[in-house]
Image (cartoon, rainbow, N blue to C red; front, side):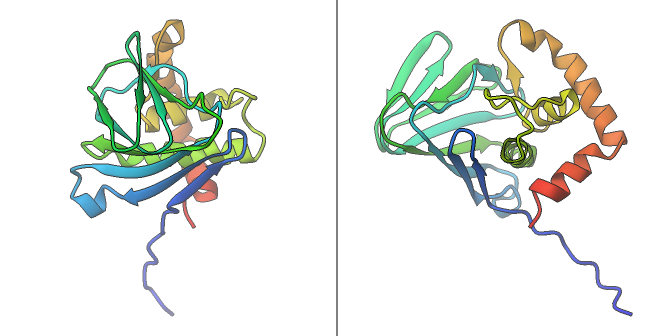
Length: 189
């Protein structure tokens, strides 16, 4: 009997069919010694995300192809290929593509936050399975709480006041095995 423990392999490419966005992991936390996490994001025309903030890492956006829009606080900034912006911890921001062609950008989280990839995997997987609304938000409140908690993503505005409730729901979902089931389905190969 083979008692070898098989290590699970995480996927490195995630596609959101709802928005036609694609996220590719270039460097994991393990590969950088926890210093940073690096991904490549393809944002379709009209794509982007709502205004939010993170408490555990800063986020650097670097345009690779096309013009990437970034809202930072109350300013809209447009990045051409090669240009970057770093969003400090706790600062409201979002990214968007209001052009006619797909925008490609690198996203770097410093320090690395592996939960971010897991959250992307779950969110994009739920979208592929029709378990999100047209806005990409999970229909199941526990799924929403897990995604938000894993990614350290706190919405700006009134919904952000629900962050303590989301943390509580995420903990409850973990105790019920929901997080592991979602990771098995959407995160691991």
